[in-house]
Image (cartoon, rainbow, N blue to C red; front, side):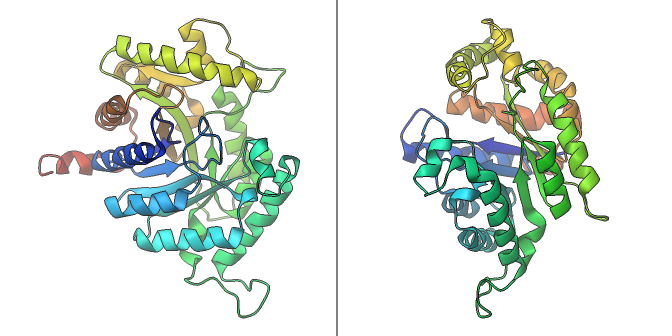
Length: 342
């Protein structure tokens, strides 16, 4: 059964401390309603892109407030990090959370951030590959420049919970050969010669390349991130979608992905947004053939970004109505059974 996750970039329009409080409350709410996992993104310097530069610190805080939900980085920008320190932080998080850590890594997407870390954005693919090798070696217990240097505590238990984010079939092949999980973004870039290709058309070849490259006997792990905001009324859902998507379209256009047109429906289509009532989002998600191939689907409200209380309500509706209608969510029955006692 497809597992469901909650993903956040911590983008609420408030102070940093309040962003962290809100994100924690949303993760606790997701656990209470049977979500399998929660994921946070790492971003440096640019608050409009994301509000969390230190994901391991925050996830350790979330681990203390939860007991079952898996806690993942989606993703750590590996070229900007010391891979041995990433391994150490991930291991400590895993121990503090009782073995619930998931380690997602990627090459990064904000060129200006690289300068502050002494890196060049144009080198990120090479640096990512080199640091990924070091990270995996550290987790596996390899010598780190000296026979006396081995990761402590051991990271071997995390080797089966490493994920790689990618936009390409090449990246899918790399993740598959390593036996890692594959992470697919809702912000998949469109080729300039085919700007209206659907998310599934772009991501199914990546999934195929990944599966074909997996070592024999290694089960696939494919996480598809999707924008979903479900509300009690169509009017409420579309009102917040109008505000959020028009705001987001400015940044997307600056980055080379302008909307197909000026209507709300064209904004929704351009930016791969599932928004509306339960019936509407079940219908649109049922047409997402790449999500149907995933082992995990992580939902986020970006770039709609409704108020916190409506995010909580969306989490409830996903767990109680949307995911069951699609046959998703491995723990939803347990949550429903436990709800009266809680």
